[in-house]
Length: 592
Image 1 (tube, rainbow, N blue to C red):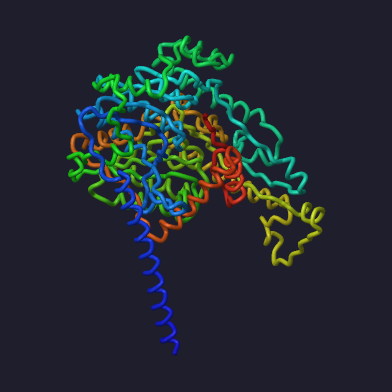
Image 2 (image 1 turned 180 degrees about the horizontal axis):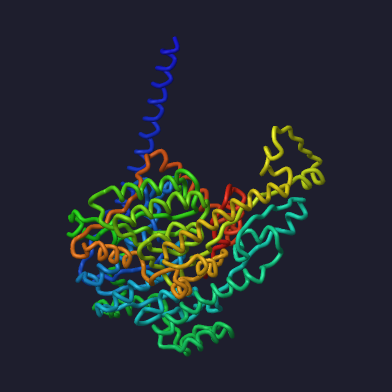
């Protein structure tokens, strides 16, 4: 009888699963057919084509881990997303593609980090060496838009448009007053006065140390952007700084007068400009043949050297670091360690590039990944390519590498650790009339529960763990960067640094993007003339991909609904869910 029940239950589950997959296949096929009907088929790039880069879609560090990952099952539509490596390779390919006449920049509002914009900008500078044109047009330029578009030969703007130019800021929200009202007492353990991740829970404004590092960080990143724009536009950096301080660029006409833009035109007039540049009739009402960056990526032919047996493997650590397996946008220590072990044992892999885009997280998970990076380094070259942020735990896993490259706007360092607990005993009693009693075998059996504070002995016990992890962290950095422990400790204490400052203090070896890291890894392995690139990405099953997509759709809707408050929501969610000793940077700087 039990066998029969088990058999029938299994049969029913099999039938239901296949029906669900059948329905999913029908939906995907329907979307595919509709895509073909609306011109979503294969793109053909003919002579006289202009490559249009609008940044309307997301540009990510790591590739989608499943073919179904490109489908938004929350809205049943395809998501526009490309990796930074795909985008850079497409721009480099366009420079030698006889069918591409030039590039048209018209920035949108996609999810693109400042560091990735910096890498795109470098690729556009290389493209200009081909002699082909690069022009930009927008109705309103944000500061990040203008940073990218300032590389163009000519910058055009709508006569009634505008440009944001007021500098960079970092806003920190503090919750101490709220916790006081709720009767919740935070228990903070940390090493380093610059480890400011816990400050919002214990203070009502920035500490002097946090203000110092934040002003230095934003000033360094902003100064670097201003310097690059000044070089491209032929405008003195001091003038650009003054324009931001005095809010000089109030109108398009002033922007034109100051040399920020080259001409004020409407959209139809811009099409006439493009037609002229592409060799068409400028008076034509037709737009020139254009291909978007995503379409061009899909149309590109694979390069011949991918047949080589020599491989450079890319492993991505993209997201918050957590213990165990990766999930959603979290970097699981066990998952990444397994990937690193696979490429280490693969004889065809001659060098490894670790792309890190992470604010850190679990110190234990970082240690697990650090060990695998160290083991690879003993056998083959390892180059770290830092994305927008590679701080705290993100730097922890980077420090053993032979070479570390970062962008000037990368946020890194934050060498420090902390622990955070909450005691809600008073709030529960005074606000809700709830009390908690406990029966325990030993005095600290319930240590860490949110219903009582820490004893002096428990605090000393936990601080010993914090100090031990901090000492290990600093020791790893000292060994990896060939510095003394004392020298590392002076620049550690949780302090964050820009890529520009990180180079000066020895935390990185140079500036460069992911493609630079790949070339450098191949060169160190002695395979620069004959290698292929493989990306170590786990392939998810369809069901997991659907669940991930639905979760992503919910997150996207929440981001849209909360607007700027989403950053604070995400910060609180992360901080309140953390367990154990954390190696995490205090905040993310948003640049408009």
